[in-house]
Structures are given as C-alpha cells and as structure tokens.
Picture 1 (cartoon, one colour):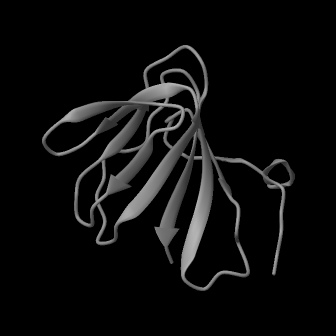
Picture 2 (cartoon, one colour; picture 1 turned 30 degrees about the vertical axis):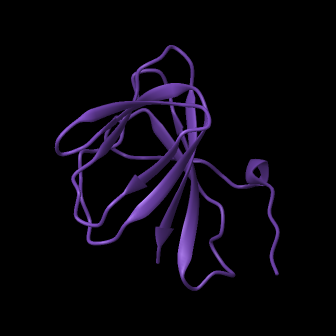
Picture 3 (spheres, helix red, strand yellow; picture 1 turned 90 degrees about the vertical axis):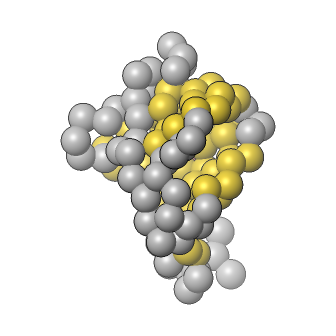
Length: 107
C-alpha cells in the first residue's frame, strides 16, 4: 500500500502554452492505471487528441467544457466524465477560476 497527499506531489506544466499543470499521483505502486490531478488556469485547455484507451475524469472544482467528436458539454464540480477509446476530445476551462479535475487512465 502506498499513500501520498496530492499537495506533496510536484505539479508540472504541460508544454505548449496550454495553461495546464499536472500531478501524477501514483507514480509507483500501481501496475494497471494512473491517476492525474490536473489544474487548468482560466483560459487553459488540453490538446485536442485521441488515444486507443478509455479514461475517466472527475471535476473537483470549477467549471468548463469537454469537447467531443459530436458535441461540447458543460461540466462543473461533481461531474463524472467518461471518454471512450478512440474518441477525439479536449477539456477547456471556460471560467475565471481554476478548473481542477482527476483523470484516471490505464498504464
């Protein structure tokens, strides 16, 4: 068993001017999936991308939108998001406050 407090993990700026910082919360101790704590500054976003695995997100604070292939949906604190494998997607902070979320992906 390994326990870490998210404040003890270093946030790393995602390169590319996205206004996005990410913390990998379980860098060791898990063979099957990873948990990331993401902070999007106002106007921040993730790259529009897809990958061959599904992943889940949970919004902790703030509000924003998730851009999908067919639609864009608003999200707020408490929103649970499921992205199917292969679907093009992007997260955007649409507010004046930091958008914080957890993102779980397979390794």
